[in-house]
Image (cartoon, rainbow, N blue to C red; front, side):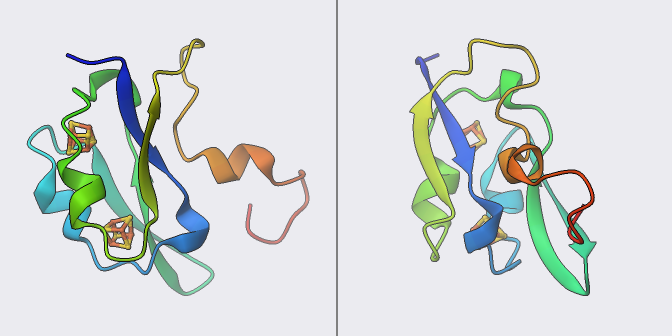
Length: 89
Ligand code: SF4
Ligand code: SF4
């Protein structure tokens, strides 16, 4: 285990699905929002920080960063940044 975890920026995700097969813990899933497929991080707490998903992602949507200090942090972070009432929510 490292102190690093995968950080997903769904705004850069093309929905290719490579991260899903890359992760031995199956921590990613694809969802469809506004007719667009994108990856979501299901449980960042389980991430071992191996970096395989970040290496496989061709669009740079996954980077490695510090482990979140709060439970639940790091799960589809873009959703939390969007104001309530935003059409993507
Ligand atoms: S590998 Fe990257 S672009 Fe492909 S689904 Fe995963 S996060 Fe999105
Ligand atoms: S860094 Fe490794 S364990 Fe964490 S989500 Fe990516 S592939 Fe899975």
